[in-house]
Every structure is written in structure tokens, then in C-alpha cells.
Length: 151
Image (cartoon, rainbow, N blue to C red; front, side, top):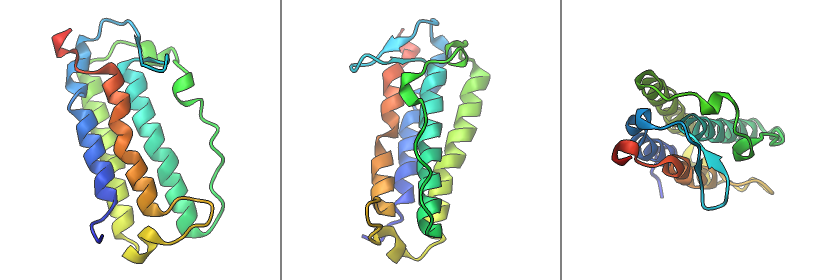
């Protein structure tokens, strides 16, 4: 397969962003996912961005031939006071800008290396393609908040 795997990340971002414009209708009550964790609009955006940042740092470390940084995020286990803030139209715009830039960075980064790097064996680590394929599920976080236009 020769299509840039980074495009998969951009597509996952766009799937997530289909829901974000409905989130200013959020009533301020955290939503509970099937696994019992709580989500809010701000937390979903934070988790999408943090997940991409984590794996982008992993890609960079793998390409540089250095160890990846250990994962010490609180991730979905943490719901911060900032996560509980009202979600405004301005927050929609900020999320769109932030997440699209991060998604596009994957496509550009993968385009900047020889496609042979995408599937190169990285030992105990995933290949670059596997990392991008893993991020296909980014929209799961957005789905935990869902379409609030019907709320």
C-alpha cells in the first residue's frame, strides 16, 4: 500500500470534528462512557489532541533512532476543572484549528520520509503505519460526547 498513512489520521480528525459544532449545547453535566469514564466536550478535545501528540512524539523518536518517551499521561482517568468549563462557539473554532493542524502534521511528516520507513520493522515498537492505523479510532473520544444538537 503506497497511500500516505498520515491521511488516516486527518480523516479521523475530520470524523471527530463533525460532532464538535454541536457541543455548545452541552448542559455542563459530564457524560459517562461504556467503560465508566467521564467525558465532556473539553476533555474529548484534550484527549484527541493529547493522543495525537503522544504518537507524533513516538514517530519522531522512532525516526531519530532514540527511545520513545514513557507514557505518563493521566489520559482519560483525569477529568480536570478545565474539562468542566462551558464549551462555546469559540471553543469549536479553537478545536477545529488545533486538531486539523495536528492531523495534517501526520500527513506532512509521513510525506517527508521515504515510504519504506512506513513499514520498517521497529522492533518492540509499532511501525509508522501501525501508529497511523491505531489513530483511526480518535473519533471514539468525540463519540463519548456525541451529537448534542439533539439534546
